Image (tube, rainbow, N blue to C red; front, side, top):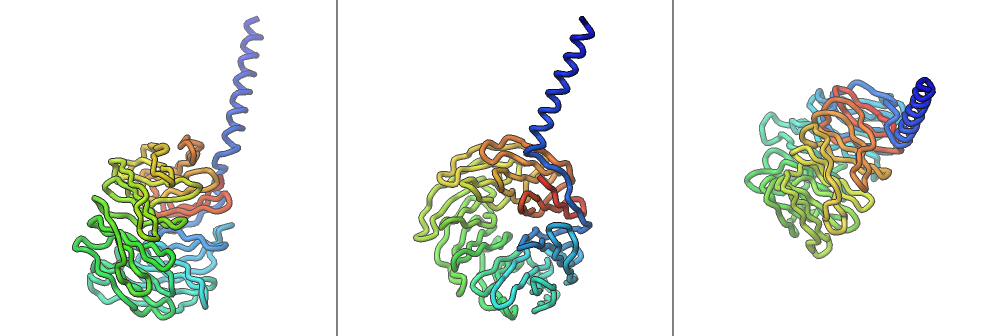
Length: 351
């Protein structure tokens, strides 16, 4: 009798383990699809079939998203920062910015040089963060507390906008003929993209991160713990929520949900319509400075301490975790593959 009970218990446990494993596999990470060596210092941009990013020694890369093969590379000589910007107009272009103020505009498909700017050897040329593009212009924040608008075709300066005394530390955002800019002193600026003239704005009690536009509204978060929504037309405030924890990422928006990362290491989701906090998740991995990704009913979060967390976007429930090293640059996602940089590698992770 004892033997039968033991055998029955073993079968039951085996069944439960098999069932649990099957349940997890249906919605969890399946493993690394490919990985390549690269000390990435910029965010990762996905356009069509390629990933675009830059590294610490000035290499700009186009990499096939399906197999990780290098399509082309170009060296600028300076560490690449911010987000590579794709501009499709008369000729498809990709624009990279280096921390020393160097800039290069390359052909999107073969990496040939369209124009290149070599900085002077002075502090005012240094770049604090990446860029945006629109209306035939390329926008970049420099260390002299100015936003520069450059002609995409030639790289020539068209206008500048001077920020406050504490400077500009984050990328601008372009949307529908306007530039949205957060300042370190908590000021939020709305500029005419063609002229650089300040049209309107707002503010917060701390440094403002790169804003995010969606469906006629602009959303901006701040180190004072606030996240705000403003209707772009007529600049009408919609809601303002404060979580009393420094928000250090730009808002990620999809499917009616907004997700951010905080300085204390939380991932927090809000209702896009009213700003109500839906859930929070603590990965216990340090500050979450890489912007979360919302896709396919999931939120992908990457704390600086390491690991990729896959969460249910509606509930914040943990679906799976992939162990890796710290992640500080923004990842991207496409067709069930999560692309990120960690430990000197770019990794394609299948879900």
